[in-house]
Length: 197
Picture 1: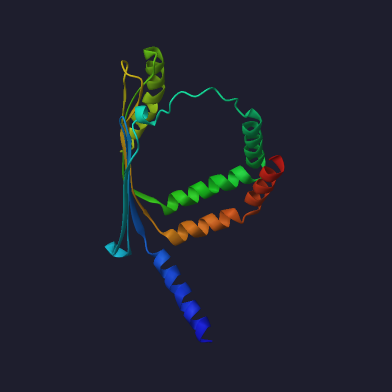
Picture 2: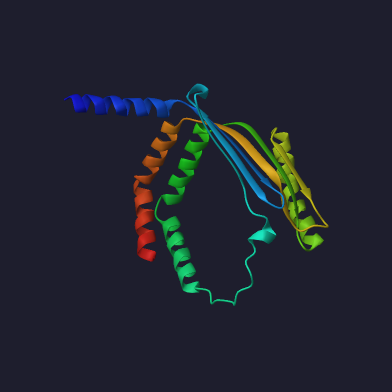
């Protein structure tokens, strides 16, 4: 009986801790290197975890030239068919959309910013893509979002930074994830994916 009481107390303590909101600060910066920073704050500031990682420069990551190896297209095609079969499972897409809606209600965005400078080898492509993005950028600005995007006609590549501060209750997210994973549409999608592999 004592073990049962201790186990129940531990379970209630874990559930109580997971019900307390946590704050997550995330920032990603892309220049010649990619720098990712995140910080997690919980239990009213008593718990903190952080990470600050910088990826290798693109030229440092490039491996010496190797002889071309034949690509395994059959494996990629099989994986693509499996993913498509899962997406086509009855009721999966509406259930996934409902999960996304529910998660959006549980995750509160306190701060968000996006700064992007992009360009393609052909300046005409850069102009066309930027022209297609302008309506979305104007809509974001009208909505009060801190989003800035600039075309670069003399340099190919993407540089910029993105960051957000999110507030979330872990228990709510875990409950939504379990409800989705155990739902009939998700189980049907998993079976379809396994059959198509």
